[in-house]
Length: 92
Image (tube, rainbow, N blue to C red; front, side):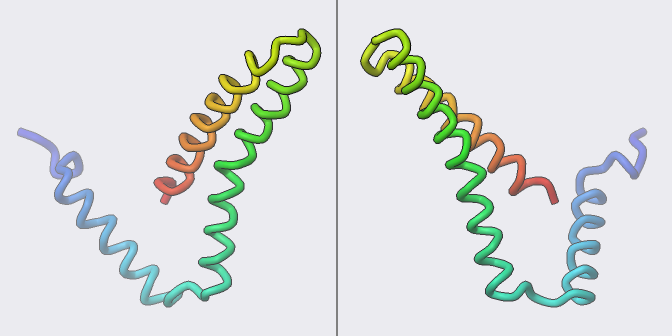
């Protein structure tokens, strides 16, 4: 027999109740706060990409290798930025 605490339906119902209580207590977010969250999300994605781009360009300049390091490090930055954004959006 499973413990009622482990039931996913009960867990989701509890989360829904908590979110609704928070919404009733705090109300809707302001437009400014929503725009700020969108801006933060953008920087969460873009910052690792820029880091990969600059590091790749530095390595390519240092070793004279064209775009050998720039493109892969840009993709690695995109991966980590997307992962961080995913974690940030699903944190609550």
